[in-house]
Image (tube, rainbow, N blue to C red; front, top):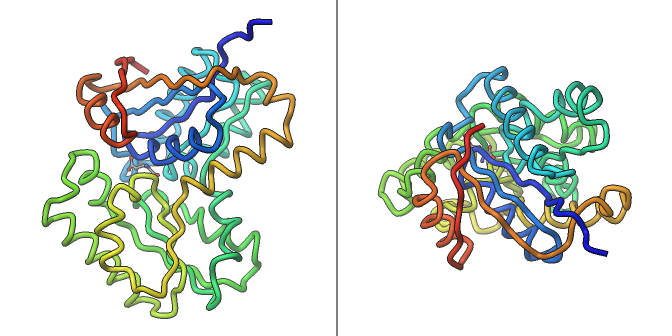
Length: 276
Ligand code: DGL
């Protein structure tokens, strides 16, 4: 029987969520996906709770209107500021059969496998850091055993969004924030890249992270967690169509998106511009 087209939605404020999408597609190639980047309104990291919630809600509604039954917020800022309200208020009221998942919880669940000193560093946007989502989630899984030091890196997302990865300014800001983090807690042995844009700066990040420190990148972790979720929730899995397709939507210029996203995904792709 021909299955309806019911893709999994993957949302980010811009290009960062592609780091999650790439891992998810590699791990679960059989599903259909829609990627939505709100490039016109990026970055979200410096915006207020209300604005991030509002923008994220608009994006999720758009993906639901495109027949997604399951949406991944491939954005830490949206996961920190909007996920809980969407899960607790919007879904039960308007979409009781649909699901929205974030990237913070699956990342935090990995930490005990990474750290030996119990000292964790989190690099994220100002919004993610101020929300305290990482310290709170980490405390939930480990009690008070783990020490968490956060560093907001407000310049990193604009560098990625503006294709300035190789600009000396990228080197300057990455070094500055990483040095700040380790100055505040030299015992850190695990650093979470708590923003989906940051893996795109990985080459520069690796120059400044001490060699003995483990870096937790979210793509593979979120992909594995989604695979596990779909096994545990066959009622959702059955609603996700499986023809192995990926479609791309952006709120900014489709041409720009095609060029940048194509380079990152490693193959040409076509994108459509939409309004939220
Ligand atoms: N990629 C996003 C995150 O993981 C958001 C960055 C932004 O728009 O500031 O936080």
